[in-house]
Image 1 (tube, rainbow, N blue to C red):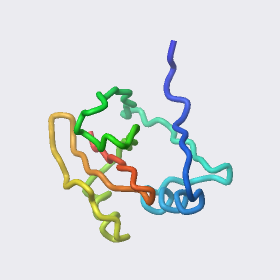
Image 2: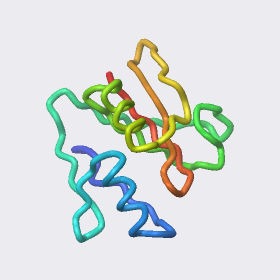
Image 3: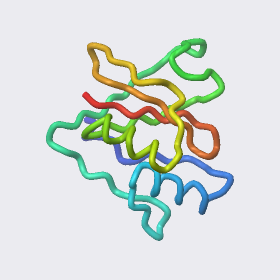
Image 4: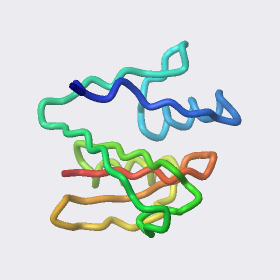
Length: 115
């Protein structure tokens, strides 16, 4: 029945600042309708997963966490360092891939993942 995700939507306190941050930091091309279309890559997977309210994987006060799959995590880390975005979590390597966390201007953790 489900074909795929149709979108991710959330409210923001400062629309222009959040658009600028996601555009500069994650290189998302945010259009004048305040969003972008991310075309699927043939090797990309979208994971939909639930966590219990007290699961320590990400802060319990944050109800949802974005996870973006990147082509090259080391290049992404270099880009973040060049523009002054600190890592909230050092690179973690597991059987699922490599992960880092950063925070957006409103304090939401965003996970970046290389499979």
